[in-house]
Image (tube, rainbow, N blue to C red; front, side, top):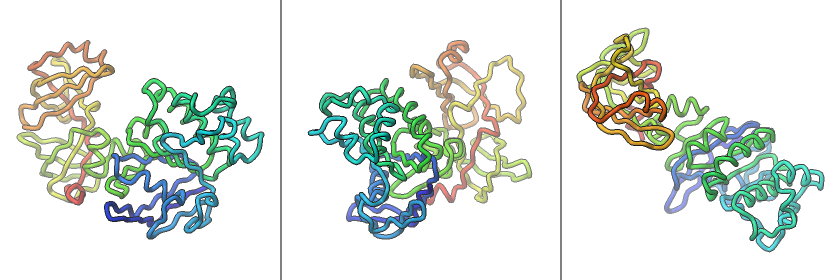
Length: 354
């Protein structure tokens, strides 16, 4: 089964979406982006709740353009579940059910079998979302659309349910589009991720491609690559680039860069803090400097490092046990390494086009 979105556009006085081009096979596509970027509008166009101004949506080769929502073969789970409040759980789940056997299987799998005689008003947030998912899937849809299904849940329930939900959705063998503004949910849920901004998809790919090799500055910043700097290309060779950055130079991969001025990024967790007694190879992009500040965040520490040769500070993220072994203090002199393979270079023209 395949969901194909081609040249999809919609506009009103305040917002323009598209053109959007996406293909979703029997997989989970996480659509990630800030509030107001068009994620929910995209789902509504695919589901037929809103009419597109241009473009097409095909599901298993069938053109859905112009079809009403009930004839599209898609199921839509809203952020709040959107259950029928005057019905019991059983009545909600069986409302559009394909068969009693399907209902029995779904209610057992989603752990709502014991809730069937309850009213909607007595359900917790996690229970409501499981019931909403059971109701959507009881109709045997050919594609599933999920709009921030975990957004209104408490953090402990959200952490537990996202893994359970991922396991369940992976077994459906239908296209699933999962909308979220949360990077962790996007990586947990999605086989691939599409990052949106201002009504368009800025990059689509695997989680590794999005987070390790962002295509634009926005993608780098939104996904947490806060170490983003400008540099000059001083040499190109078969091994990559030599970048002039402040009063130092760095070895970096080439990535087909053509501009003489580029942006490069390195994720905070890939900046290596080196012990003074550790031998290093200067080709590992070693910088000397001092610790400016440290912030404890529970699972890890964020350390701000100020290089001697560059005005820009570098953020380092260290797991708490590692930080505690290093016993760092503010203003400590240290060395860091920006490994060549961890640096990602973005052509300046692509950055300016945003």
